[in-house]
Image (cartoon, rainbow, N blue to C red; front, side, top):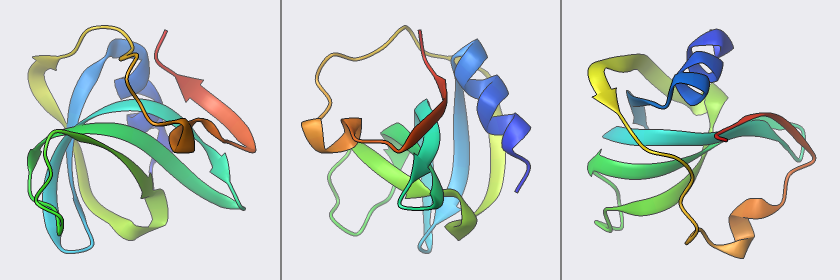
Length: 99
């Protein structure tokens, strides 16, 4: 996995697309870090599909389980959301985060 795509998307507030657990997803990457030894991103999913059907919503995504990662050209998002769940704030290491 090329993590520079994730870091650049966070730094430039760019929307990303990828497939995770068989579902195509469109999301705003907010935090890239490590939790329990796994590289993960916290995203605000704004499109695509999920098993729960709940969109938009916060998702923690394990990077090694995604495919087809790409930046959506011309789609940017604004600064941080204040409404993410406390469950998503617990990281062992934060590598990049939206400012």
